[in-house]
Length: 311
Image (cartoon, rainbow, N blue to C red; front, side):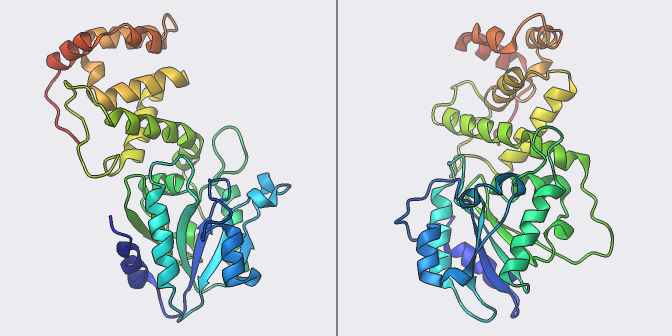
């Protein structure tokens, strides 16, 4: 994916009255001397172009709250900075935390959008744990987009949100005004809870892709480190494992990685099904059981299952 693609997306989505904003996460690594550090952008654009997105859970640590930066007022270009942000976003594709969270378009001024982003952190709390969710992170937004399909009312008053995907591309989601109460499905709160696990599994998937098993029918050979829709695929596999009763986090992660790297229909094999049932019953750990399998054992399992094509 070339950085110029982002410029084209912004040009297509941006209306004459739209501000162009950049959302940054200071919890991600970015050196103080980097031109996209918050300090550098404040020096370049002025303090009035930078606004803290005050997360309730980080109210006592404002330096760790997301930062919204006005790159351009309505009618003004920002191609140089856009190009720089696109290059940096693509360089972060394999990072757990991403400094560049997205590019936002809206007719509303900077303080209004900052308050909107902060308020939405409270709208989609995870099903367990913290009462807020950093929904603006690229991975979480990608999962949100895939789960809800239409998130226009979640975004409004943003007319568009462009974000870097986990497979090294850029995506654009449209915002739209709505006349009904905002309803957040339970699945959205569930995915906010599962997002850290999805992130860990994506990192493991990237590493395993560097030297996939020779017998694996699913080895990803594309230009990026992950196939398209990888986050949602991982999320669905986790949900399926939990729905079958495998609620142990490590065992569920182990199963998901083996389904990804070995065979998607692994549970159809009688021996694997037996191991799975024992793990669900608490009679063994799937992690420990799978660790006893050699490459030869796994190749026999794959050979006994229906043929499956790669991603």
